[in-house]
Length: 465
Image 1 (tube, rainbow, N blue to C red):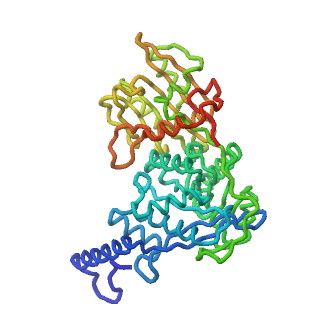
Image 2 (cartoon, rainbow, N blue to C red):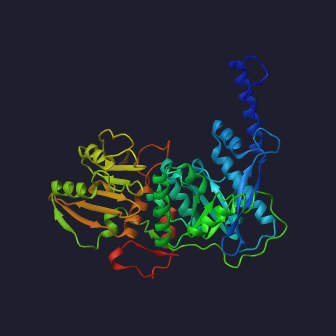
């Protein structure tokens, strides 16, 4: 790779030489990116029961024998040039082009990865036609790396929602490193969860056990499929079957390679799950429970109630919890809520919404500002997401200084509320003001069948396949 000195010299390159080499490498990378000079290989995904190939995962490569041949080198160069999103679109477009040009059975699925930096960026104009054709023809599953869930959770969910609207599936990739992001599994609504044997082997015994049990619990509850990756031997394949995995991937089952001349159609395609969607016309969490029974209480009793549901150490036996809170216009409450909600460094995501100037957050807490006219300005809530017992306390203030309060432990409803809120968290570099749901999403929702049944106890959201 460029940028490294010759091992035979007594001294490394000077700073000027290193800078010149870096500039040349940057120019070379920009050239290949603008020429769209990337290619794709495909690794098979097998049904562990039938042995059939049911999907192919697209893996990007740079030009052969170049410094950018490997995906790591390719994307490292893109990050140095701040063009990761563009490269990500180019790689996906190359995968679509190869799939469309080959004689692939319609029931065969294509797995593609999305880099976290690409979530908020539009498709380059020269690739729009190809991507649009792929969206209308191919059976695609979008792989979301679990790192992105904390780096840009709102962007991840926006990309997930867009994929769902296209009719595509969602995969949560690289699960196994830790339990830090397991509480987000139901928020992503993944159709497949990829459990990585290599990451599990590197994790502590406690973390490995927590990851496996949490993933198996999620799969059983939601109907999602389990895919075990990193299978390098028959023993690994047998362990995957023992865990109840439907699908497997790894060198033992098939190495990355160009597309074959012919694939047999799988007897059963990779299935999609049913997903509960939040109504984008809903402005706040309290509106989602407006028809439920409420209790009336003052602010002090509301604080005591919040403390009861968020004791220190909650959720540490399984997934590390995700915490979402709102202090409304109560500026003094923000620090106390943040400190109480975090209480431990393991929480992978803790967000506090509030109107006006808020106290400095505790370490690891994100503050999201809402407009004084936003419905959230008149609400208080505390939502604890865990893989075992998600819970939400939701309150709306009234003119007499009291609050209407409801508590729910309905997992599906809590997850819908959390999805609605996380969609409003701005991504890195986009400030700290709460995002609004795009108008075109509201328009899409209003074009759906208004006669679809809605459970009266869950007003504002409904089931959609």
